[in-house]
Length: 53
Image (cartoon, rainbow, N blue to C red):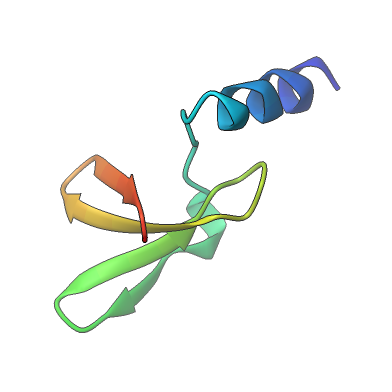
């Protein structure tokens, strides 16, 4: 419960955590979503993810 709550607080601050189970290949890159709020994320490089706008 505490981990989920701290994850949601981080989302409000703009620090999203990638969901490892939601990763899927798209073209030459990968897409996922935030594990806590579901916002779409895009992989820039290995271990480097950003929020997809």
